[in-house]
Amino acid sequence: MTSGNPFEIAQRQLDDCARILDLDPGVHAILRQPMREMHLALPVRMDDGSVQVFPAYRVQYNDAKGPTKGGIRFHPEETIDTVRALAAWMTWKCALLDLPLGGGKGGVICNPKSLSRNELERLSRAYARAFAPFIGPDVDVPAPDVYTNPQIMAWMMDEYSKVLHKNAFGVLTGKPLCVGGSAGRGDATARGGLITIREAAGILGLDLSRARIAIQGYGNAGYYAAALARSEFGSTIVAVSDSRGGVYHPTGIDPDVALAHKQATGSVAGLPGAQPIANGDLLELDVDVLIPAALEQVITGENAGRVKARILAELANGPTTPEADEILDANGVHVIPDFLCNAGGVTVSYFEMVQNNAMFYWEESEVHQRLDQRMTLAYHRVLEAAQRYGVTMRQAAYAVAVSTVAEAMQLRGWV
Ligand code: GLU
Image (tube, rainbow, N blue to C red; front, side, top):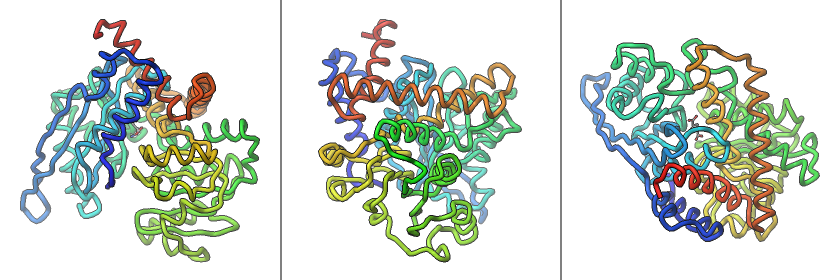
């Protein structure tokens, strides 16, 4: 999935932050490692009667601020180090948004595109059953991520509920609405990211109604980012892509037409009326806003110098390497770092947990308003820290998040 080791990158970013904050060495040592991780093997009966064993992980990185929280990814190139890095980033994400949660992440090495619906259900249930002793509303609360979705969350919640012999809706988030989901969770990651883009554009004096936007990745985050940028801001989506290829249209792509094409053919590639564009070339387009919304390490020391966007809004987790960061900074690209930009998903997941606990569900407008409030505040806290410490937006996001977790650890007497 990635070239460099993502967990080493996460550790380097933390080391950099420890230097900026002059962090207590005990706090630093604790935060450099996951608190706990589970490696399990999931035997699953396939449709042809054979049994396949899927390696599965759950990393609970740090729970000083509350139960660990984070998605589960189904991906053929998943690695434990990717899951560790993502669990660390969830810790910083929850702290930055001031959620009463720690960070965690899960993963299964599998190719969901080659599984039938029944096989996918059996794998999802196997995950929930095997990890049931280690997760729970007060312990560790999973959610969807790359190639997992609300249906998978419903199966997992159901399996966990069966193990416990009671309905346990709060065990995970991102569920469908009628089984304990929250209004507004579906597009929350993209909506949160667009709020940070709106704030950044305000600071930079960029008129979003005239902005040209390119989006890499057309899953849940990428599609909604395209649709909302057009409907809320009136921006022009000039390019979109997915793992199979991309399309470019100088006067604009209709996000819903691109989605319908992807649903019909399996990819946005080949969208009628648009020109083909390679994933790598999309990142270098002359646009105002570039949104990586797929996987890690796509902007590297090699291509960062050719990024022309004014705003790089990281809806994906970990799309930019530390080498790229230095180049982007020198070139004056305004980076909205991943665990700020894509924090809308976990923020509405937190709202889902609150609603599950209260057994009382909010209107979508209330979710939107509370999400806007938290994302706007987080953006400005990071901007203010960047100015105060004279550092990049990513370093500033780290400074705010890590000092929050450090304070919780100190108050709990861990250090
Ligand atoms: N997987 C999403 C993320 O990376 C959401 C996590 C959650 O809702 O817990 O932030």
